[in-house]
Image (cartoon, rainbow, N blue to C red; front, side, top):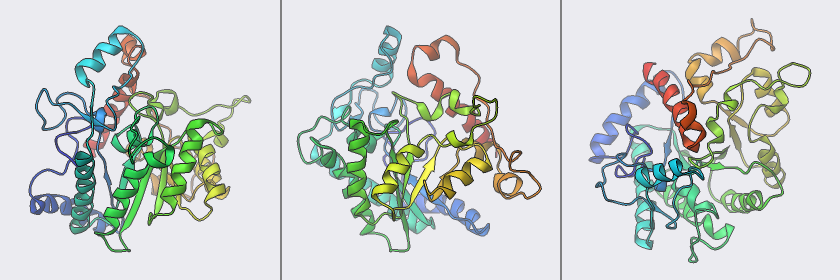
Length: 346
């Protein structure tokens, strides 16, 4: 997180302390990765209104910040409403000064990542976090240069990309992660395409397509942890990849834009199908990469495994029971916590 006052959860890595200390700590990670001949890109994020009480170095009564004073919607029942009020409250509408400060925070984080030896940064504008909130018509009802139309709602993202590019060399990778709409030919997907049109004109090396938020945690639902079984009883690789439909639409408009799709891939066949059909250029793996740390060698590029055997399914987290049916983000939170425990054990 670019601001240690606002974290998405306790324990998040944040830009906190003097630059020299941050660079020293981050460099320890990048050195290990570079020694293995791998590439490491730092994801830069700000949670905005998705920063719960107690997550961050802000005072107990301090409000979260967001493009507009619109609270999260965790559900339509009393328990969900009380949880939202207690844990998240109603965010403060950001002033222009606060917006400038966020741009400076993202820029500083990118500058530190460069000094620490990262190969690039990814600006996180997905999963309902602050930049995603600016992009969304349901979270952003501003009428200034940062709201009022799909093109204006992407203005903050554009300014951050430009500010970062002014501080890093051309060889330093700058990507962006963005939410996609579930279905094409809707207002939301039309807005997405207009925003991608603007982003594609900037000096970005790739666009990562993902989805979900605290309000609609589709990326971490239990159903999305399970293999997809077709009508014949066989696993359907054609439906691997949650966001390939949006990727196809973006590809039509921007054939030279590097697209990375994350979410839902569970087999070598599924990965190959998406790449060979030109739906995307890169595949992102999250939970499978945690469960199978040596996934490339043991599964994806293992010639001893038949294609049908080269799978990397993941199990759902233990159910949180009744409460997960009442508060939308509980199931996703359980899934995140479950896999973070595996990650911390590596």
